[in-house]
Amino acid sequence: MQLTHHTARQATLVLGGTGKTGRRVVERLTARGLPVRVGSRSGEPPFDWEDRSTWAPALDGACSVYLSYYPDLAIPGAVEASASFAELAVASGVRRLVLLSGRGEPEAERAEQAVRDTGAALTILRSTWFMQNFSEDYMLEHVLSGEIRLPGGDVPTPFLDVEDIADVAVAALNDDRHAGQVYELTGPRSLTFADVAQEIGEAAGREIRYVPLSLEQHAVEAAEHGVPAEVIELLTYLFSEVVVDGRNAETTDGVRRALGREARDFGDYARDAAASGVWSSSAVTA
Ligand SMILES: NC(=O)c1ccc[n+]([C@@H]2O[C@H](COP(=O)([O-])OP(=O)(O)OC[C@H]3O[C@@H](n4cnc5c(N)ncnc54)[C@H](OP(=O)(O)O)[C@@H]3O)[C@@H](O)[C@H]2O)c1
Image (cartoon, rainbow, N blue to C red; front, top):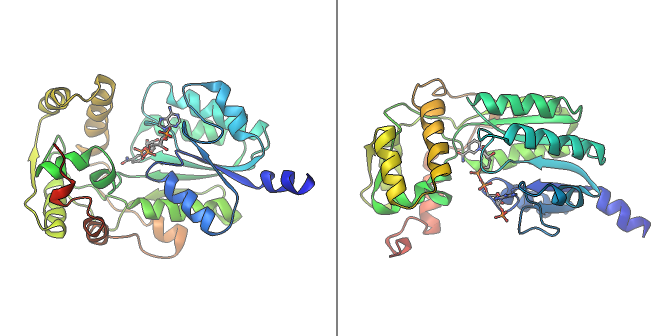
């Protein structure tokens, strides 16, 4: 009984533990033999941002938390929800928090401050756009159709491999040296969407074009494809705030600072994603 309690006390709760970053954090902690709990609607017990009654059971016995909000810290209510959750976490005995934040989003920085105010040992992973959006999220459909039709202009973005986020998260969850740090995380090269189309096309062995759209055109096309209105609103916000003015085009040394090695390059990501078959013609479904 004592041992069970002790083991449970060591658990790390990984929010979004089946998603792009969380799944990889769970894999790494499990591989190290560390106790881990998936915090998502399909977790055991389930965790739902929309249902506060699920928060305390998910936190019960956890000593650290990987806090990844869904869908985005920029949506209305996200700052308040992540702040309330972090307060509850600290009140229920969590000592260490690792917060996945967004680079260049003022709301994300408000969330960072609110979570910092809880007094937990906090590491902030202020991340730019993920490479895996092209293979594990809505941009995959664009790639499979052969045309990346987005309002990304011709501004470069230093896309980040989520494998690097997971490595930094696990380091921060297990080593006090990272407490109090804010890591601005980017990949090692800034690429325009036209560069991305070319590199994915070369890796996947197929023709892929970037077609720059206006924000309005993109909203109309997304609606025609059945994308929900609130998601279109979020994408419009992200493209107009985070990408298009070039404020976030520069690379940073965050991965090197956190891990002592360089960030993964888009070319390596594209090679591995292509090898997984996710971009092959047979992945195109009716
Ligand atoms: N994508 C990017 O380029 C990017 C860049 C910087 C920062 N971020 C930040 O990364 C975070 C995650 O974004 P993502 O796009 O990578 O998503 P993701 O982690 O791939 O999202 C899916 C995860 O969220 C869970 N989930 C969905 N709805 C939920 C709910 N109502 N309550 C609890 N869990 C829920 C899902 O599990 P279940 O289905 O089991 O619930 C799954 O584990 C966001 O805060 C975003 O701001 C993203």
